[in-house]
Amino acid sequence: MRLLPQDKELGWTPYVWLVYLGFFFIQPSADWSNWKEWLATVLGSIAFLVLYFTAYWLPGRRRLWAIAAITLLGIGFAPFNAGAAVFFIYAAASVAFIGDTWFAFKAIAALVAIVVLETLLFHLGPNFWLFGTVLPVAIGSVNIHFAQRDQANHRLRMARDEIAHLATVAERERIARDLHDVLGHTLSVVILKSELAGKLIGLDPKRAENEIRDVEKISREALAEVRNAIGGYRAGGLEEEFVRAVSTLKTAGVAAECQTGPVPLSPAQETVLALAVRESVTNVVRHAHAGRCHLRLEQVDGHCKLEIQDDGRGGKQTEGNGVRGMRERVEALGGTLERETSAGTRLTILLPLEAANRSGLA
Image (cartoon, rainbow, N blue to C red; front, side, top):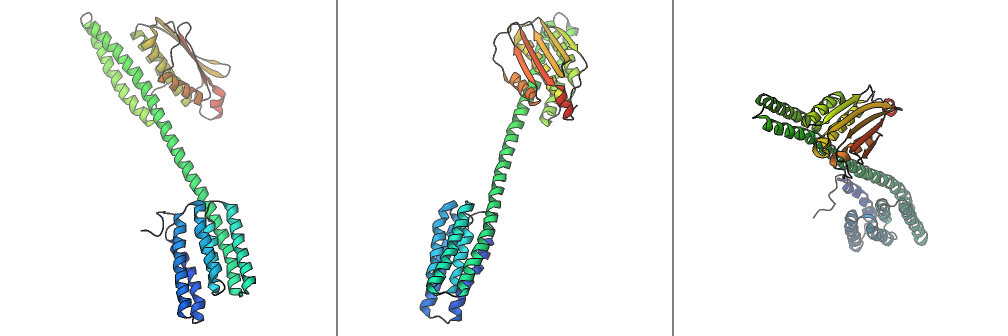
Protein backbone atom coordinates (compact mmCIF):
# COMPACT_ATOMS: atom_id res chain seq x y z
CA MET A 1 0.00 0.00 0.00
CA ARG A 2 1.42 3.38 -1.03
CA LEU A 3 1.78 6.11 1.58
CA LEU A 4 1.08 8.84 -0.98
CA PRO A 5 -1.38 9.04 -3.92
CA GLN A 6 -0.13 8.55 -7.47
CA ASP A 7 0.59 12.17 -8.36
CA LYS A 8 3.53 13.28 -10.52
CA GLU A 9 3.33 16.84 -9.20
CA LEU A 10 3.37 15.66 -5.58
CA GLY A 11 6.60 13.72 -5.97
CA TRP A 12 8.77 13.02 -2.92
CA THR A 13 8.44 16.44 -1.19
CA PRO A 14 5.96 15.22 1.51
CA TYR A 15 8.72 12.99 2.86
CA VAL A 16 11.11 15.95 3.06
CA TRP A 17 8.67 17.98 5.19
CA LEU A 18 8.82 15.25 7.83
CA VAL A 19 12.16 16.71 8.89
CA TYR A 20 10.20 19.15 11.08
CA LEU A 21 8.96 16.23 13.17
CA GLY A 22 12.48 16.00 14.61
CA PHE A 23 11.76 19.08 16.75
CA PHE A 24 9.18 16.98 18.63
CA PHE A 25 12.01 14.81 20.02
CA ILE A 26 14.36 17.62 21.11
CA GLN A 27 12.84 18.32 24.54
CA PRO A 28 12.45 14.66 25.60
CA SER A 29 16.08 14.12 24.65
CA ALA A 30 17.34 17.28 26.39
CA ASP A 31 15.32 16.61 29.57
CA TRP A 32 16.27 12.94 29.79
CA SER A 33 12.59 12.01 29.95
CA ASN A 34 11.46 8.72 31.48
CA TRP A 35 10.14 5.78 29.48
CA LYS A 36 6.49 6.85 29.91
CA GLU A 37 7.17 10.25 28.38
CA TRP A 38 9.13 8.62 25.55
CA LEU A 39 6.33 6.15 24.97
CA ALA A 40 3.82 9.03 24.73
CA THR A 41 6.15 10.87 22.34
CA VAL A 42 6.56 7.82 20.08
CA LEU A 43 2.82 7.03 20.10
CA GLY A 44 2.04 10.68 19.34
CA SER A 45 4.50 10.59 16.43
CA ILE A 46 2.95 7.42 15.04
CA ALA A 47 -0.54 8.92 15.32
CA PHE A 48 0.70 12.02 13.55
CA LEU A 49 2.26 10.03 10.68
CA VAL A 50 -1.00 8.15 10.12
CA LEU A 51 -2.95 11.43 10.01
CA TYR A 52 -0.28 13.15 7.91
CA PHE A 53 -0.34 10.60 5.09
CA THR A 54 -4.11 10.13 5.36
CA ALA A 55 -4.60 13.85 4.67
CA TYR A 56 -2.92 13.45 1.27
CA TRP A 57 -5.52 10.89 0.22
CA LEU A 58 -8.53 12.99 1.25
CA PRO A 59 -9.89 15.52 -1.28
CA GLY A 60 -10.92 19.08 -0.43
CA ARG A 61 -12.56 19.68 2.94
CA ARG A 62 -12.68 15.99 3.75
CA ARG A 63 -9.10 16.32 4.98
CA LEU A 64 -10.23 18.77 7.68
CA TRP A 65 -10.88 15.97 10.15
CA ALA A 66 -7.24 14.81 9.79
CA ILE A 67 -6.04 18.41 10.19
CA ALA A 68 -8.24 18.81 13.27
CA ALA A 69 -6.80 15.62 14.78
CA ILE A 70 -3.23 16.88 14.16
CA THR A 71 -4.20 20.13 15.88
CA LEU A 72 -5.51 18.17 18.88
CA LEU A 73 -2.13 16.41 19.10
CA GLY A 74 -0.48 19.81 19.29
CA ILE A 75 -2.89 21.00 21.96
CA GLY A 76 -2.44 17.84 24.04
CA PHE A 77 1.38 17.72 23.94
CA ALA A 78 2.07 21.47 24.15
CA PRO A 79 2.01 21.70 28.00
CA PHE A 80 4.69 18.97 28.23
CA ASN A 81 6.69 19.36 25.01
CA ALA A 82 7.45 22.69 23.30
CA GLY A 83 8.22 20.73 20.12
CA ALA A 84 4.46 20.15 19.78
CA ALA A 85 4.44 23.46 17.88
CA VAL A 86 5.34 21.44 14.79
CA PHE A 87 1.83 19.96 14.78
CA PHE A 88 0.39 23.45 14.33
CA ILE A 89 2.86 24.03 11.49
CA TYR A 90 1.73 20.83 9.75
CA ALA A 91 -1.92 21.73 10.28
CA ALA A 92 -1.43 25.19 8.75
CA ALA A 93 0.52 23.73 5.81
CA SER A 94 -2.21 21.15 5.11
CA VAL A 95 -5.21 23.45 5.46
CA ALA A 96 -3.87 25.57 2.58
CA PHE A 97 -4.74 22.81 0.11
CA ILE A 98 -8.41 22.32 0.94
CA GLY A 99 -9.43 24.41 -2.08
CA ASP A 100 -10.88 27.48 -0.34
CA THR A 101 -8.40 30.35 0.08
CA TRP A 102 -10.38 32.48 2.55
CA PHE A 103 -11.28 29.48 4.68
CA ALA A 104 -7.58 28.52 4.76
CA PHE A 105 -6.59 31.99 6.00
CA LYS A 106 -9.29 31.84 8.69
CA ALA A 107 -8.14 28.37 9.74
CA ILE A 108 -4.52 29.55 10.05
CA ALA A 109 -5.68 32.50 12.13
CA ALA A 110 -7.60 30.08 14.36
CA LEU A 111 -4.48 27.92 14.79
CA VAL A 112 -2.45 30.97 15.84
CA ALA A 113 -5.19 31.95 18.28
CA ILE A 114 -5.10 28.46 19.82
CA VAL A 115 -1.32 28.70 20.26
CA VAL A 116 -1.62 32.13 21.91
CA LEU A 117 -4.45 30.97 24.18
CA GLU A 118 -2.61 27.82 25.25
CA THR A 119 0.55 29.83 25.90
CA LEU A 120 -1.39 32.13 28.23
CA LEU A 121 -3.22 29.31 30.02
CA PHE A 122 -0.18 27.11 30.66
CA HIS A 123 2.50 29.83 30.75
CA LEU A 124 4.47 28.15 27.99
CA GLY A 125 7.91 29.33 26.95
CA PRO A 126 8.94 31.32 23.88
CA ASN A 127 10.10 28.22 22.01
CA PHE A 128 6.51 27.06 21.75
CA TRP A 129 4.61 30.26 20.99
CA LEU A 130 7.29 31.68 18.66
CA PHE A 131 7.42 28.60 16.45
CA GLY A 132 3.69 28.03 16.89
CA THR A 133 2.73 31.45 15.54
CA VAL A 134 5.40 32.63 13.08
CA LEU A 135 6.01 29.42 11.14
CA PRO A 136 2.32 28.41 10.71
CA VAL A 137 1.57 31.88 9.28
CA ALA A 138 4.64 31.86 7.00
CA ILE A 139 4.39 28.27 5.77
CA GLY A 140 0.59 28.34 5.55
CA SER A 141 0.63 31.53 3.45
CA VAL A 142 3.28 30.13 1.11
CA ASN A 143 1.29 26.93 0.68
CA ILE A 144 -1.86 28.92 -0.05
CA HIS A 145 0.05 30.60 -2.89
CA PHE A 146 1.17 27.23 -4.24
CA ALA A 147 -2.35 25.85 -3.88
CA GLN A 148 -3.73 28.76 -5.92
CA ARG A 149 -1.07 28.16 -8.55
CA ASP A 150 -1.90 24.46 -8.68
CA GLN A 151 -5.60 25.27 -9.10
CA ALA A 152 -4.80 27.71 -11.92
CA ASN A 153 -2.59 25.13 -13.62
CA HIS A 154 -5.34 22.54 -13.25
CA ARG A 155 -7.85 24.88 -14.90
CA LEU A 156 -5.35 25.60 -17.68
CA ARG A 157 -4.84 21.89 -18.28
CA MET A 158 -8.59 21.34 -18.42
CA ALA A 159 -8.96 24.25 -20.85
CA ARG A 160 -6.09 22.94 -22.97
CA ASP A 161 -7.61 19.46 -23.08
CA GLU A 162 -10.99 20.92 -24.02
CA ILE A 163 -9.41 23.04 -26.76
CA ALA A 164 -7.56 20.00 -28.08
CA HIS A 165 -10.80 18.01 -28.08
CA LEU A 166 -12.70 20.77 -29.89
CA ALA A 167 -9.88 21.15 -32.41
CA THR A 168 -9.98 17.41 -33.08
CA VAL A 169 -13.75 17.50 -33.58
CA ALA A 170 -13.47 20.54 -35.86
CA GLU A 171 -10.74 18.88 -37.91
CA ARG A 172 -12.82 15.73 -38.31
CA GLU A 173 -15.78 17.80 -39.44
CA ARG A 174 -13.57 19.71 -41.89
CA ILE A 175 -12.20 16.51 -43.39
CA ALA A 176 -15.71 15.05 -43.59
CA ARG A 177 -17.00 18.15 -45.40
CA ASP A 178 -14.04 18.25 -47.76
CA LEU A 179 -14.23 14.56 -48.60
CA HIS A 180 -17.96 14.90 -49.16
CA ASP A 181 -17.43 17.78 -51.55
CA VAL A 182 -14.54 16.17 -53.41
CA LEU A 183 -15.88 12.63 -53.69
CA GLY A 184 -19.53 13.59 -54.09
CA HIS A 185 -18.80 15.75 -57.13
CA THR A 186 -16.22 13.43 -58.66
CA LEU A 187 -18.24 10.25 -58.27
CA SER A 188 -21.24 11.96 -59.82
CA VAL A 189 -19.17 12.91 -62.87
CA VAL A 190 -17.66 9.42 -63.07
CA ILE A 191 -21.14 7.88 -63.01
CA LEU A 192 -22.38 10.26 -65.71
CA LYS A 193 -19.45 9.65 -68.00
CA SER A 194 -19.52 5.91 -67.40
CA GLU A 195 -23.23 5.76 -68.26
CA LEU A 196 -22.63 7.89 -71.33
CA ALA A 197 -19.73 5.69 -72.44
CA GLY A 198 -21.89 2.59 -71.99
CA LYS A 199 -24.57 4.07 -74.25
CA LEU A 200 -22.04 5.16 -76.87
CA ILE A 201 -20.11 1.90 -77.18
CA GLY A 202 -22.32 0.61 -80.01
CA LEU A 203 -23.14 4.01 -81.50
CA ASP A 204 -19.89 5.95 -81.36
CA PRO A 205 -16.94 3.84 -80.10
CA LYS A 206 -14.46 6.70 -80.50
CA ARG A 207 -16.45 9.06 -78.29
CA ALA A 208 -17.05 6.25 -75.80
CA GLU A 209 -13.29 5.73 -75.64
CA ASN A 210 -12.81 9.46 -74.93
CA GLU A 211 -15.36 9.35 -72.13
CA ILE A 212 -13.58 6.39 -70.52
CA ARG A 213 -10.32 8.29 -70.72
CA ASP A 214 -12.03 11.21 -69.00
CA VAL A 215 -13.19 8.85 -66.28
CA GLU A 216 -9.60 7.72 -65.73
CA LYS A 217 -8.36 11.31 -65.69
CA ILE A 218 -11.06 12.45 -63.26
CA SER A 219 -10.37 9.49 -60.98
CA ARG A 220 -6.68 10.36 -60.81
CA GLU A 221 -7.52 13.99 -60.09
CA ALA A 222 -9.94 12.88 -57.37
CA LEU A 223 -7.21 10.84 -55.71
CA ALA A 224 -4.92 13.88 -55.65
CA GLU A 225 -7.73 16.08 -54.32
CA VAL A 226 -8.50 13.65 -51.52
CA ARG A 227 -4.86 13.77 -50.46
CA ASN A 228 -4.89 17.55 -50.63
CA ALA A 229 -8.12 17.76 -48.64
CA ILE A 230 -6.72 15.58 -45.87
CA GLY A 231 -3.62 17.76 -45.77
CA GLY A 232 -5.76 20.89 -45.56
CA TYR A 233 -4.80 22.29 -48.97
CA ARG A 234 -6.57 22.83 -52.23
CA ALA A 235 -5.28 22.42 -55.79
CA GLY A 236 -6.61 24.73 -58.48
CA GLY A 237 -8.79 27.77 -57.98
CA LEU A 238 -12.19 29.25 -58.62
CA GLU A 239 -11.63 29.80 -62.33
CA GLU A 240 -10.70 26.16 -62.81
CA GLU A 241 -13.78 25.14 -60.85
CA PHE A 242 -16.05 27.17 -63.13
CA VAL A 243 -14.54 25.44 -66.18
CA ARG A 244 -15.06 22.06 -64.57
CA ALA A 245 -18.63 22.96 -63.59
CA VAL A 246 -19.58 23.89 -67.16
CA SER A 247 -18.06 20.66 -68.46
CA THR A 248 -19.92 18.60 -65.87
CA LEU A 249 -23.24 20.27 -66.62
CA LYS A 250 -22.86 19.74 -70.35
CA THR A 251 -21.98 16.09 -69.80
CA ALA A 252 -25.20 15.73 -67.81
CA GLY A 253 -27.19 17.38 -70.60
CA VAL A 254 -27.72 20.64 -68.75
CA ALA A 255 -27.17 23.87 -70.70
CA ALA A 256 -24.69 25.99 -68.76
CA GLU A 257 -24.19 29.74 -68.70
CA CYS A 258 -21.27 31.22 -66.79
CA GLN A 259 -20.68 34.91 -66.13
CA THR A 260 -17.67 35.94 -64.04
CA GLY A 261 -16.13 39.34 -63.40
CA PRO A 262 -12.92 40.44 -61.70
CA VAL A 263 -13.35 40.12 -57.93
CA PRO A 264 -10.44 40.58 -55.44
CA LEU A 265 -10.75 37.42 -53.36
CA SER A 266 -8.57 36.13 -50.56
CA PRO A 267 -7.30 32.54 -50.85
CA ALA A 268 -9.73 31.46 -48.12
CA GLN A 269 -12.69 33.07 -49.92
CA GLU A 270 -11.68 31.59 -53.26
CA THR A 271 -11.50 28.12 -51.71
CA VAL A 272 -14.93 28.47 -50.10
CA LEU A 273 -16.53 29.70 -53.33
CA ALA A 274 -14.85 26.96 -55.37
CA LEU A 275 -16.27 24.36 -53.00
CA ALA A 276 -19.68 26.01 -53.21
CA VAL A 277 -19.63 25.87 -57.02
CA ARG A 278 -18.62 22.22 -56.90
CA GLU A 279 -21.29 21.22 -54.40
CA SER A 280 -24.03 23.22 -56.13
CA VAL A 281 -23.30 21.78 -59.57
CA THR A 282 -23.21 18.29 -58.07
CA ASN A 283 -26.67 18.88 -56.56
CA VAL A 284 -27.99 20.18 -59.90
CA VAL A 285 -26.75 17.08 -61.69
CA ARG A 286 -28.00 14.69 -59.02
CA HIS A 287 -31.32 16.09 -57.91
CA ALA A 288 -32.58 19.09 -59.90
CA HIS A 289 -33.64 17.45 -63.20
CA ALA A 290 -32.82 20.81 -64.72
CA GLY A 291 -32.40 21.78 -68.35
CA ARG A 292 -30.45 24.97 -67.74
CA CYS A 293 -28.11 26.30 -65.06
CA HIS A 294 -26.75 29.83 -64.71
CA LEU A 295 -23.58 30.67 -62.73
CA ARG A 296 -22.70 34.28 -61.95
CA LEU A 297 -19.83 35.82 -59.95
CA GLU A 298 -19.69 39.58 -59.43
CA GLN A 299 -18.78 42.36 -57.01
CA VAL A 300 -21.76 44.19 -55.46
CA ASP A 301 -21.56 46.95 -52.82
CA GLY A 302 -18.27 45.80 -51.33
CA HIS A 303 -19.33 42.14 -51.38
CA CYS A 304 -18.54 39.21 -53.59
CA LYS A 305 -21.77 37.69 -54.86
CA LEU A 306 -21.96 34.15 -56.20
CA GLU A 307 -25.29 33.06 -57.65
CA ILE A 308 -26.11 29.62 -59.01
CA GLN A 309 -29.60 29.11 -60.40
CA ASP A 310 -31.25 26.21 -62.21
CA ASP A 311 -34.70 25.68 -63.69
CA GLY A 312 -35.20 22.29 -62.09
CA ARG A 313 -37.93 20.95 -59.85
CA GLY A 314 -37.02 23.03 -56.77
CA GLY A 315 -39.33 22.35 -53.85
CA LYS A 316 -38.75 22.50 -50.11
CA GLN A 317 -35.92 20.02 -49.92
CA THR A 318 -34.09 19.45 -46.65
CA GLU A 319 -30.54 20.73 -46.60
CA GLY A 320 -28.06 17.90 -46.84
CA ASN A 321 -24.53 17.65 -45.50
CA GLY A 322 -23.12 19.44 -48.53
CA VAL A 323 -25.28 22.55 -48.16
CA ARG A 324 -24.70 22.62 -44.39
CA GLY A 325 -20.98 22.40 -45.00
CA MET A 326 -21.20 25.29 -47.47
CA ARG A 327 -23.15 27.40 -45.01
CA GLU A 328 -20.64 26.75 -42.20
CA ARG A 329 -17.69 27.75 -44.39
CA VAL A 330 -19.40 30.89 -45.66
CA GLU A 331 -20.50 32.04 -42.21
CA ALA A 332 -17.00 31.38 -40.85
CA LEU A 333 -15.79 34.12 -43.26
CA GLY A 334 -18.55 36.52 -42.18
CA GLY A 335 -20.74 35.85 -45.22
CA THR A 336 -24.29 34.70 -45.79
CA LEU A 337 -25.88 31.92 -47.82
CA GLU A 338 -29.47 31.99 -49.06
CA ARG A 339 -31.26 29.15 -50.82
CA GLU A 340 -34.55 29.64 -52.67
CA THR A 341 -36.46 26.69 -54.12
CA SER A 342 -39.76 28.23 -55.23
CA ALA A 343 -38.95 28.16 -58.98
CA GLY A 344 -36.05 25.84 -59.51
CA THR A 345 -33.21 26.40 -57.05
CA ARG A 346 -31.23 29.58 -56.58
CA LEU A 347 -28.22 29.67 -54.28
CA THR A 348 -26.84 33.09 -53.36
CA ILE A 349 -23.62 33.61 -51.42
CA LEU A 350 -22.36 36.99 -50.23
CA LEU A 351 -18.86 37.45 -48.80
CA PRO A 352 -17.57 40.80 -47.46
CA LEU A 353 -14.51 41.90 -49.42
CA GLU A 354 -13.41 44.70 -47.06
CA ALA A 355 -13.18 42.35 -44.06
CA ALA A 356 -10.93 40.05 -46.06
CA ASN A 357 -8.66 42.93 -47.09
CA ARG A 358 -8.40 44.21 -43.51
CA SER A 359 -7.42 40.78 -42.25
CA GLY A 360 -4.54 40.66 -44.71
CA LEU A 361 -5.87 37.64 -46.54
CA ALA A 362 -6.40 39.31 -49.89
